[in-house]
Image (tube, rainbow, N blue to C red; front, side):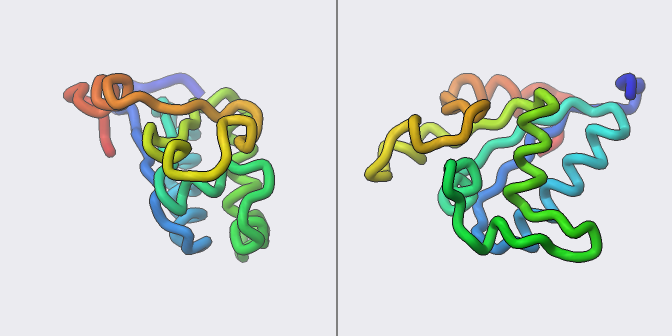
Length: 124
């Protein structure tokens, strides 16, 4: 779908491990994409675990009514070209490195994210 004059960039920040919270944030982000808004996803703290090659089991379990898991919907975003990053402090505070992340997930820098969310039209 083409961006409309009313389409504002969206920065979705997921910090929760709760699968309903994760999935709802991703569902709302998908709705924004479907309406033409560019979306970028930032995963921090327990939300960053969604980006692992082996995400927590709780994030892999499909939820009704769409029968999709948070990890599954995140993969669809990545495969469709949506920018997905873990926050800058996610990896340094873990015992693993970037190789533990699924392909297509980057590591955000504070200046990059600040540049995105301080644009007047961006919604967080």
